[in-house]
Length: 174
Image (tube, rainbow, N blue to C red; front, side, top):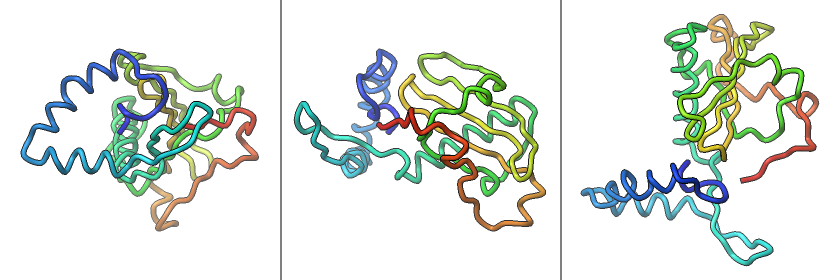
């Protein structure tokens, strides 16, 4: 889904599509994979006519993968290890991170054209760390890892970042 989302495809996204993804369509379950992809696409009207879009925030599998990435990065950076999925909240980055918060975040990447991320340990209230993960310079997600002590106080998590803490002027759409 990450490869087909966003505007203009990058060289890296084209390479993945032309190799790994196309090959997966030739496997025994290839028909199901094509159908799954097709079912995620929604027809939309633009100034240039009809096109198809995918809404990553509505795809539970994408959000689950983003949570896994954040959990792994937390372990890698020795912030918190063996993080249960219940302690992680993730969503599409809908608003620009305020400048004062962004400046305090550590920037890292494996390959900036594939995945780059920022993070900050916060340890305030029920927030242990905050993450912004961007795939293919096109799709950004925000994630929060709640401290382990918060697990006992809540069975489910709602977004903790709201519009009062984020700039609405740079709302992103996919």
